[in-house]
Length: 597
Image (cartoon, rainbow, N blue to C red; front, top):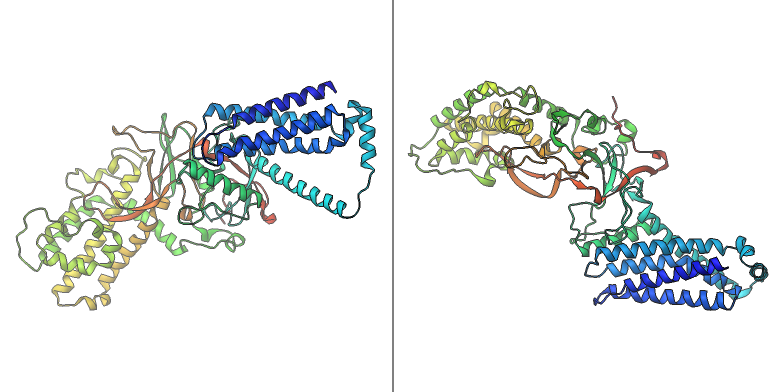
């Protein structure tokens, strides 16, 4: 009995101190934290110390148990309320509050264990007899119905709060909302994430369990989306939405952005880059270098990266909704990449010079060029505009002052100042002086831009020749040579539209002196397995128009979301350890994709 009294006194003292620490003087929801914790602790003290222990009234045992069962839930609610206001609480206050809550929880569990029916005999034989006698009393009628309802409500509330605590500190369920991880996960799959080793935090604070694990390339992780603001208002909204999401077993989602659209938060992706690495993605091959090694292909990335969904096995294909590329488009992608690698820069230079001369010979007016007028610039150089307005551009350049000179710059500025073009080749290492820009990614963009220029130069020269022959633009579609030029451009256009899914520049970018930078300690880079249909850490949510090759003032332009970033370990919620639904796909996520071979 003495041991029980001491434990109860200590529990109540810590609960009272915890309550005092929840005092807030801000005129917002945080002001409710102290009254909630203080009033509950006062009632617990009254029922336990005065009615139960002092009066030695065993009939109060049931409400005493209920109070101790609810103590962790009420105090964690007060903890959340105190931090749900407009202002942050100091880290020291959060830490002390979290420690006090933990001690109170442990003590409440110990007390509940001691006053269990099976152990009452050891505490007090009189209590055991009285409890046994009261248990035999049967209640009938409306009172019995009321008690049954209260017991069901009590069980439901306790189950809800238990689930919440388990979800915060132990494991959580997530529903896969998109096809970014096909074939590892499909839309609607439900995944269990074990969080204890990932350093889970107390709600709305930076206090939590220590990190007990690091992550390796290939691990599938769930993490907070860094694209969204993490200010206090959004964090409170996210917590509340996660609360509803957890209580409804992932069926109700309320986490929306300012436009009312559901946020893609959290995300489920695969770790592709680890601390100490610098990455590059070219033609679907992931390259990595470290402080002790140059760029090398990460062969394991091909175990899970999916490029052509049409190669999935038939059972998985039936469950996939979106196929970004057809088989023919993917084959064309591989062909274009091979043509780019095989491009002879010396021959390309000669053809560009020839096209410039041919176009100049077809110019309609004999106006003298002066100044630095560039008839086509900015958005006009976007690949979509250049395709749709090729007829207009041809006429404009043929008749505008400086048109022929602009055409010459467009076709030839890329090689002016470059010596020994035959020394540049993509055959070899992924970095070095044999590559334009010094690395494989920049060199590939340089060549792709040149391929488009060559194809566009051929089209404009053909357009000019048709005009010189008196053929009107309305009849150009029947010209086979021009149709072939347009076909080549359309193939390149489609490739450029999707190229950021297969390519990514050096990340993290080199410093201002050209020295490599690396992913910092405790940070990771994530991508989805379904690379053509994954908006992941390669991309931002804002599209911008940029040159295909930034080293060419006359480069064609395209719209891109490319803006890679890494994720700090503090935002990782844990590994996606188990797929629990549907039952037909139950199991641990694999480290290889489901591609038919």
